[in-house]
Image (cartoon, rainbow, N blue to C red; front, side, top):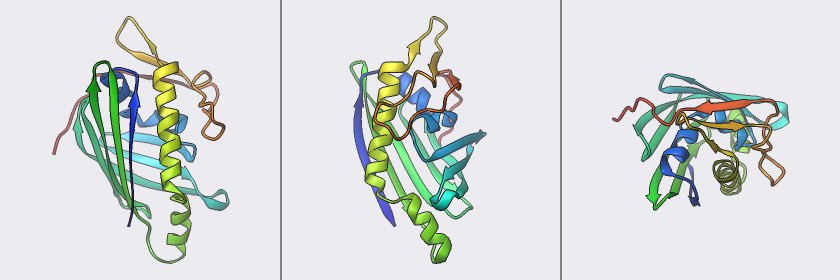
Length: 181
């Protein structure tokens, strides 16, 4: 089993940081291998670019959601066994964010393919968090109606890989129904 744990400070209010992370449809903006994540209640269906042009899919389930504080998940079914947690700590208008991921690819040929998804996970996670930070700090625009809007054409990470998909608009509201287990 592999594991990655990273910390990052984001110069934005905790509710704004949490709101973007809680919207999985925004993940392709800052996770370069993620093609799509679709929320189906507390289950999220992932489609990720794999090796040799393959798409790898799996579902995850939100197992703990404390608004503006913590979001934890685990995979359910599929070939990609993983779990993780993101914690959000308020630091006088900034947010300290901790991201922890544990993963275990299956054995055999399928395992080899899935293992390539996690090739250099430390670097992939670091790059994703830096792109996320950039989007939240520089590109998110506060609105009078308490929503935040990110235009994917403007929210392009500046470090090459992981550039946003063009002509996509992401909107999310900071208040969500919470579920804690």
